[in-house]
Length: 294
Image (cartoon, rainbow, N blue to C red; front, side):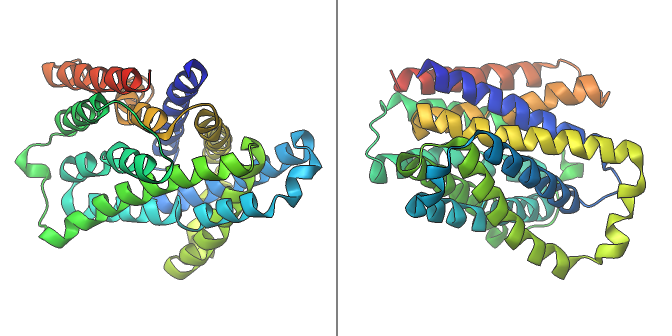
């Protein structure tokens, strides 16, 4: 369990670092295009790692391969799309707390289908994490946008699908306990589906002119390698620990992004009472989630 906890925290740090780097390097580029190029490079990296380190007998594990193909078909493509739509329609301040319900959905599904049995205290921990993210993402009235009740389905849908994906990853790892190969399969599946969406939505020749900039290309390579490593660490954490333990810890990512943005993006996010309260709530929630798995 200790290994899973450490890996989950590392995963949160890697994901936050990748997001900050993408934000730093692609201010003029649509986020989805930055994500797409990152997936392309990380997929190549993962297959190289698979060729170098994965025993060939895993290649005949067709049940495990199928599970990770299914995972890649909707995560991250559908999850990220719903997340972006939620932020666009509701604003980050309203969408972030709903998107943060992933640990709740993941835990409920894990109890039902993976027969996990965390202590009831985990739901108090998840509630504190969500409350902390509400405090962290609180905006003033100028940041709110026009919305309708149906728009709440975007971040809720993203949270639910992310919870489903986490459980499928755990189930797939039970069939094929090889994080690098599983990451490569899921990344390839994601790339196929994401390619179709990107080609439909953007003019490819005009959209990817930014690659000519050496500085931005270096940043995207770094972010891509972090994404690839993050996929491996994510699956490794699930390999060693329960879904109900790993996913709540991963919910610390927004908090890590705030601190990294202050350091590397020079954003003026001073240590306010709001930030301190959010930090305490999220950390207390994570602590309760870890205790629930003991």
